[in-house]
Length: 444
Ligand SMILES: [Zn+2]
Ligand SMILES: [Zn+2]
Ligand SMILES: [Zn+2]
Ligand SMILES: [Zn+2]
Ligand SMILES: [Zn+2]
Ligand SMILES: [Zn+2]
Ligand SMILES: [Zn+2]
Image (cartoon, rainbow, N blue to C red; front, side):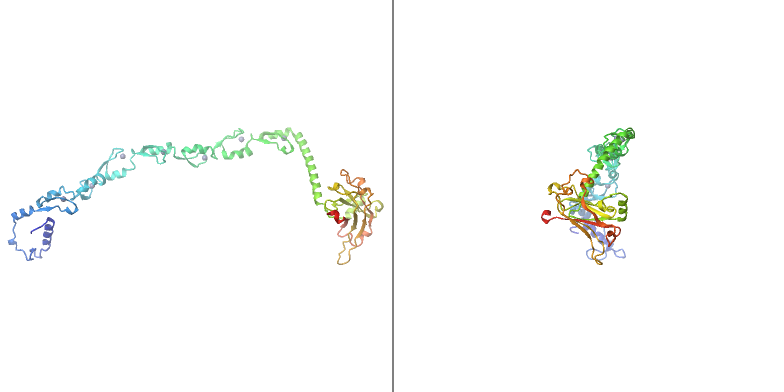
């Protein structure tokens, strides 16, 4: 026992006790021989010497710098910063004396804390729950409107006062930040607006206004339905019936002149269309269908003349027309088919040479099947005499039925007997053909 430091001393003593034999006999730690109890006795003098030995604190390795006599160790423990003690608040935590102030101040669940905002006293545990909900704490509005207030006022603020709170538009139901809602309502499609015609219809949503004015508004001005005929009257929808009743006569007059103008237009269009559909290769093949009925008609009405569509001798050439008397004309009346050709006023007359002097050929076509027998068309040809009036330049104002425009042709072109032969009439139709021989150089 030369240099015992207290922990070793205590450790060795415990070891000895463990070495106690089964019979309760202690052995000497030096030589392992059983101790003779008769030779063991207290030695107060030695004890005093041991207790006066200088030692270090058992917490020296953790950092305690205390040294002193062994007998002072217990006393030192009551102030040693490294000694482990239970929390005086009985929170069940043990810690070094050094860590205690921090624990008592910040961590101890049983510590006493006073809320800086409401002044209430809490244990540490309860304070942690209180933090963040103290009604007296001053906080910023969560909507970032910049307002700061005690937490207990916040819900009222967010609900009714905050300029950044969201709120549904009471017309369209969409959500808006409160301070933009007024601006929205200048555009809100469901915002109620007044009818510009002051018809008194309440609550017309902005998006329905155009339709209202167009379809439903009794005060909207509308145009008279006779506007296309020229009536300029304009009045509220409700009054239009009255206008129609009061102005029947003038509306009819307007309609009359409109119809006149349109008839004129139609005639013009028809003329243009005919002009466009006129053939211009100097050949006319004219089908007269329904022959027997037409012959009958010609017999009943003296000198009834059928007219072919007009045709041009060539592009930009003379405009001609063929006519036929199915029951004959002049010397052929009652016995023959007569055929004539006449010059009509044409678009290019001023560019042409007059009188018309080209060779004309008339045919009635034999419609026999060429594979069975050679068709035998009946043909007549003539060269206009420059002295004949018929082929002078026509006056454009002349009516085509005028006597002076009578064509030139053959009163006895084919007799009624002859026409029944072969296939001149087939399927109750005849084909008359006129062709004009124009020299190539003129067509160019
Ligand atoms: Zn210590
Ligand atoms: Zn504690
Ligand atoms: Zn509080
Ligand atoms: Zn706010
Ligand atoms: Zn809205
Ligand atoms: Zn209205
Ligand atoms: Zn009118």
